Length: 256
View 1: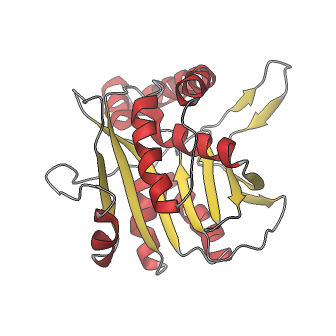
View 2: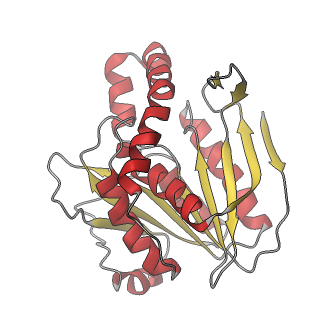
């Protein structure tokens, strides 16, 4: 099952797509969600898939809903599409399917650039986490180095999850893409790392040429952490049944 439900079809001019799904330290998810809030971005589409975990999320009023990915838009100097969601995929094939769904929306709106956000797990992280990047075309390195992004294969040689796949698959679609990863010690996925998210947002705001008030980031990150706890615990139990406890732990730790 794959359903993309459009609530609105906005007219956007070669927008930049920013993706932030749950991952290590949740820095990508926090950054994208905070961007939605501060830009007052408007939701225009929802993406449902059988590649998400086979469960529903029940709110405090007893209302159940399917897991989903949401698309928001913002019109400004650069039009922006922001992608946030409840979960990544349950299987390797699922990661490809979800990435293809996001790219379907990107092509529909003539996206000119994709920026994916995530965390790079480190045992020790300084108070000012570095931003490490990977691009799908050599010409982009020169373009993005001015933002103090580190491009070094010894630091980063694989990216597991949608944040990495979107960069690779966008190349096939002739869309430029970059993955930005903030150093974080935020294990497991449910742990919120507002410091890593702040580092990502500072870099992202320069690239997008926007101003973002980061004063409420820590508070919002903690609120998101509470919301994600039940979902992450459920996903962990399911993965443990499918993969076994040790393989499940490895799988979660390497999702950017």
